[in-house]
Image (cartoon, rainbow, N blue to C red; front, side, top):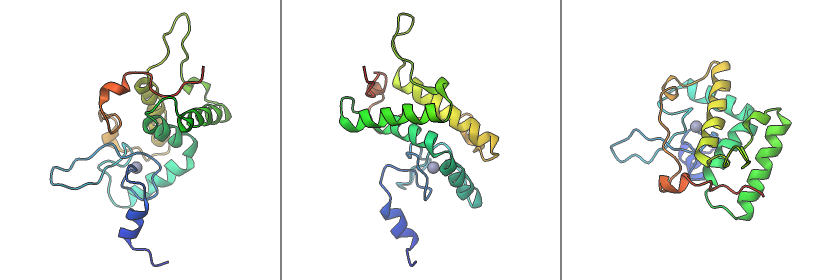
Length: 164
Ligand SMILES: [Zn+2]
């Protein structure tokens, strides 16, 4: 294998976290000097061997990491991709016995969970698991997460494609 670091970076979809192999979306950047590297909450501010340790853990928690990615990524409701992603998340959460993490559907007591709230719960669950594995990035305890790449206002809608 003669892949250079640059090749590997170039192979990765632009929206992903700058840590190689990380399944999450890059949503945080500390740079004010023109760098285009964006990091997920788990990798933000982390250096050296710890980067890979976190990636390895995220890979082993792929079912949840993928859900966090998809809820953040699919911001266009009503698309086939969005519907498929939602169905897959529900399936994976059920499979891993986390019905508590399912999206809260509209009912008589609840208007239906907002997408950013759901994402928050999923990300907190992922943080708790990274913490349990001893690789939680200390800076992600208090980090405020900017949402998505677009206007935050769209995120206040349900947005994601809830099958009803
Ligand atoms: Zn990452």
